Image (cartoon, helix red, strand yellow):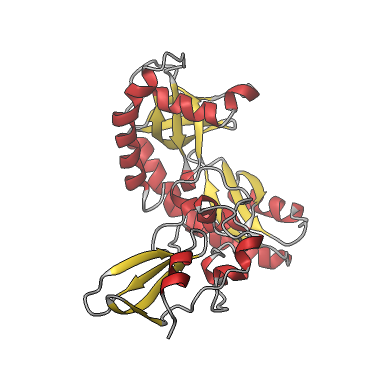
Length: 315
């Protein structure tokens, strides 16, 4: 239900509780100990109140109220950490009412969840067929069947507004359930894919980023960052065809106007040093540093651009 990497995320959350919860408790800040962060389908997390006042462990299945019905979720964080996350998201300032944990999940709930997962592929195929039948210009991304099977949520992407009223009536009569159509962005589509990025790791949006939004820090890199004139667009554009989320955590503003006129030697060129011949291994325009590698012993040396221009002559 929670994706192939849910076990890893839950284990990290358990480690976080062991290491940090005591630190939060020592701050003297008051918080509601009954607040729990629950992970629902597709890594979607919301905050709920536990009215039973019983201790809840991370990773335990629970049944939560959901828009006039109920759904299945997994406890992701509790206590001080859940309250801290809620405060950081500004939910306390908005005064939003939280949902309630109805009860702890039992074996029959796990069986119902398996039945829902078995039914979802067939619902997806039927939805795809209905979309083609009505001739709608939209792309079906994902569907979610609630645990009580009284609501089907359809996620789609489209380049323009779609009139899906006839489609909803057709699907409602077919599934005997309430139909909700949700138009999502390409970032949300990539998150639901739960795939790997160019770095070899699970996409940030699928693994740990909780809120998907435009990345204001991922600006287009300047040509000065590639002194050889190479085009590395594939390194900054993600599967959503938008700037990668991870670029927001790199050094911002590394390429300023006075940096663009700096001349850097081409990668792979050879230089003569007092220790012998070396090869330019990498260049850091942000820090104005050049890394040299000696092929004889594999030793690497990092020099500033000023030191390089003063000491070495390119071959």
